[in-house]
Length: 466
Image (cartoon, rainbow, N blue to C red):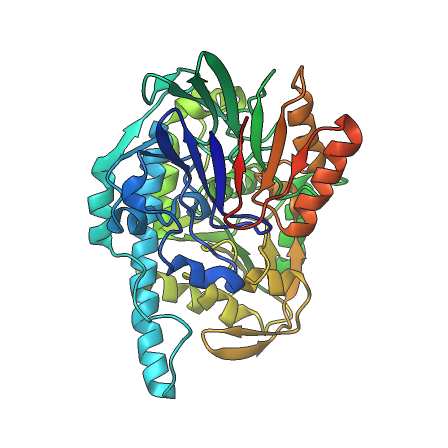
């Protein structure tokens, strides 16, 4: 039995991990790279032959975990893609939207490069198309939470709620070989406790091997003030200045949680009733999937729905789908709230809204999620005063605000809390899906607290599991 790390090692996106066990080759996640320094990997052939893989197990539907699946299928994978029903429905939306954005961006870049007489570092074409997504969907099969699914006579997998986004899962793989049993747990992305809408993360009492994320392995979230208080202040201050509140958001979970909080602030009259736009066809579709999968929601969300109130809607909230509707937002006079994807500002409509507001001192750019190294969003939160958007340089005059409490990831304390549920020491803990500094910091904490063997692998490293 062995594990090989094919993505999201010493960096955050592009999650891919290969487990060879019980006569099977199983890939856990097939994510898209979003950091600028690693974009070229999206175009490279997989380090392993896709045709040799028996199963692709998806932990959840974020782009950096499922976004390269159509390319993987196009390169020869013909096995089963197993995940929860909610993840399947969300992944379909994510992959179609990604294909659409890539096709649009490729066309836009081709025209720009033609005009400028230059070539980019990789081919100006879509990584995959909507047709590739259609060929991928028949391979999906679903698993239920907490029910073992046999992969063959010697290997089974159980999906447990990760508390990260709707349908997210931790994978518990049980392997039998030569009369012995081993358990390997893949954490996926671990959510925070007591977050709205989704349930709390699952915990485990034992595992022989753990492969876990470390996104916030080096620090804790700033929880000195509640998320709603921080959001309330920035909205009111921006309205007083006469600007727009521009919020890059992730279409899955973050957009829905954001609308939940704005709805509460509006209902409690802590902010004025504003025109607000969720400028993302994908986020609008995702919100409908949320309504269809109430079985994945926590008791607080279900109680709101049972009372007859709307969970993710408020007066003045508009879902914009067409390009024309999106462009019309820029003609709004007075203050409004603009939520648009992508959350790290790597593509999509948010870049147009940033270009229109970045030079306005009265506007606020509000970042509510992790911004990976090498992304435009990271440049903003790192305080860069001059940024490049759609090939043009812009001076950053707008107010830049970061609210950490929105994160769907557990912080260092939360990750240690999750590990602390184990009643016996695992043989090894592997840390991925975190920038190098964060992963190494978490490894140090694990060794310091429990003296466990904590490993931060390098790209394509292989490790034999006893």
